[in-house]
Image (cartoon, rainbow, N blue to C red):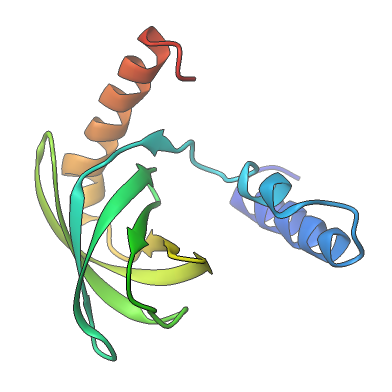
Length: 135
């Protein structure tokens, strides 16, 4: 089996193995479907439960972004993200998927900005990081 379903099943199996002590959390993180690229820009998160929260991004992929945030956000909450990339300003909805201390992972919930801004930015970051030896 190939494609997104196979990847999801593999992650699910790894999660079960991790509960038995077979894998570390870092093993799960590194098996994501989309490659991540280092990106450090300011981000504003608009949360229904926490209001407006400022943070700083860590990395980005075509499917999501991670950020360091000083306040606690509920996991699984739909939030609106505002940040600026080289190809333009992004204001889009995302779901808070994970939390590790002050680092949060957000999965993009809409694709309007993905095709126009996020995908081209990831391509440029991939080239830059490849040239600089970061990949």
